Image (tube, rainbow, N blue to C red):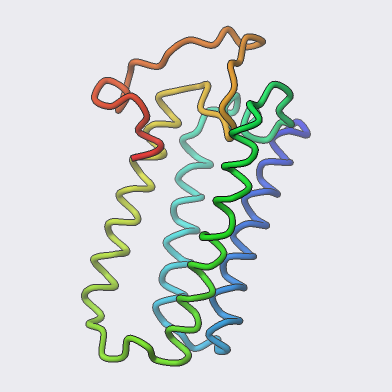
Length: 160
């Protein structure tokens, strides 16, 4: 494993730990079944990704990017705020019971939709060896437009 693959694995693990920490700390309990089920599904998704994603793609997603558009840097930075907020609000919702008596079946439906959406994202990554974490032309890798997998139906399946 080269340093870019190790870097990407560390990025993903740190993100997972932060998300789990935000959920459980804001809920102020470790006894939240839905949070643990969610984190378990996240581990399942990460495991599937590690198995099916080409090494070349994991390496690309872990490397420091040089020719990233300025607008992409700004948008990527700003998207962190609602993502962090999502985990904090969910934890406080559980703790303060803002939405008490919410049917457990709705949580399961949401989890299935989350998993299926993640698998669409994975399919897009498997189908496009240029699927980067930043918008950039990868001339160093012979960048071409992806047309296989979900790209035959929609131009940007990672955004769907």
